[in-house]
Image (cartoon, rainbow, N blue to C red; front, side):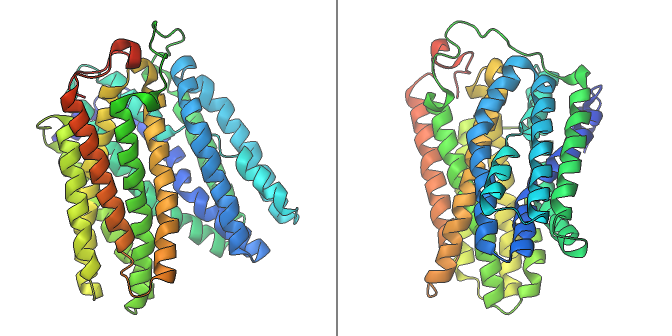
Length: 409
């Protein structure tokens, strides 16, 4: 744990990390909170899913522009008014559900409360600014951030479900909103560690959208397919556990996957990085694709559980290396925008993968539910290989295309 001790020895590091965690946990609560609240109040999972999907869609659209605003004007100046808008939208949503407002009002509220800057991207930007001259510390920070993401995705939905069912339908959204507002305000108050804004980009730095930068485009496609792996894997696991007669063990089995990812992330961050990041990304995606394959033949819970643990261990190094590549592919003036863009691709992939995995489980009874994550993992590997081969053929984008991009990207 020595590398992590050195990481938090930086002044202000622990303070902004704790504040950000309070604001990041609600991000994993909101989907379940919206679905349970609407389903319990309106007795319609179709409406609940559509409202939740609206929020995800708006987040995907607004995420990169908000990241661009954060780069240009600073984290606090963008995050505080954005979270105020979110609070108004969440309050309106609760009132609409409580007073039985028309369905269209729920969609408007979901859209209005979804435009919040990514605290995960902003914390990663702070680590990059704190350790701009220490690649090993940045590697450890990226690993730690991935572990935090895993903890949030594991604890957030469970917390929302407990609160909604034990108290009242709106309680999950109210708790998530309170945590998000409090965490964001506390995070924004940590001005000492806030990276300086870049109000006037250098000539040519913004001439080309980030999605047209070849290296980042391949990385975005890799994250999109990797998100599909995550989303479909969760649905496939629930369906498989039920078919094996252990419906009550679904949460515990999924927790094993997250535990494997957390453990691998901590170990990966403590080890010095070796080789080019693009090569490490291809190796990580290949390991993930191989780790999913044995799940196709799992016929008992005793077999499924350790296989999911191994599959989880393959995901963290992939995500960590991918986020490290973002640092190399985009200039400092566009770092929040770049990380938010790839993270948005991951969220879109998770939603699409969950939908595809659910369709497979419902309509292809003779086919293993793990077929969908296996196909998605193969697509992720193809995208990673395409980016790696393209990077070997060219020295990298010119400064007019992407700013101060590293040559080995």
